[in-house]
Image (cartoon, rainbow, N blue to C red):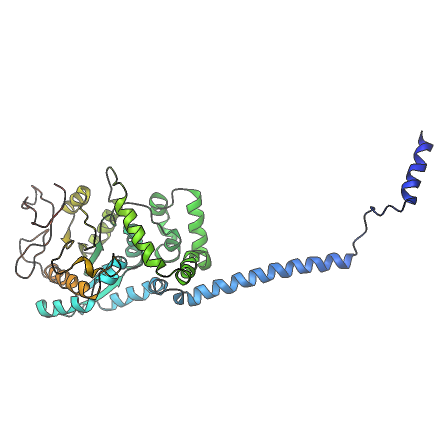
Length: 373
């Protein structure tokens, strides 16, 4: 049996079978390894260059990025104005950016109080209380940096508790690692979101990837960003309201302001779609040293003055800012017995603070107040 197997081997060998493995020269193996390392090196170089571009020139990516990167500088500017006049911080989003005319606010203060206020707008796009809380906490708390007056412009659900929609921005611009407990409680409910935060915290390229996408879509699709803002606003308005909305994040922000002796005004801004105040929000206002300014409807602002269906044009902004400025002068120099309420120069009440037996507020709301009973 063993001798019969030998001819088979010889036949296979003599048939010229070329399937036997060939030895790869050592030099070729080394060359292939070098090529692979070159590819890795090129990829790392590209990533490093991209990271450097975002860190050193990210402000050129968009006006919003430039604004976000300027937060520390703006906070320092506010701190340096201490003692030179009332320092007013307007905190909000693009509604406040378009709607608050700082020159008009300053003019009203000069007319009514004879002082020149230092005004500052912190208005990152598409944000709400989840983002504003961290911005204020990390940039404006402390006796030296806190403003004299904090004005939070909002509409509809901007003040309700909800996770931030911009984990990458939280990591890059709003938060520090000291915010981790609050982040996990409110904004990072799972390992995936926590991993995204960690990556965005370490990499500017990863943290700004959505802006690159929007920049490309802005180029390819005319009116893309304005259209998306209108769609998001309509979807938010159409969404079923929460059975019992909460305002824990707003409460924490108000506590930070109170610790620094900052007066707070919640300014309900005009938008084309009507909206009401949640009973929970009114309850929080009643419990806190905060003013709720109702400017949802002004006779001088018509639907045609919202240039893109959401934001006020220059004329509407001037009208809104004049009404807002008149109200704010009473906060800087409040009249006796007006706790919880602000008044026009002529005495017309424009602010609703919910009634309370403890404070003795009148239970009849202003005629234009559409808050729930």
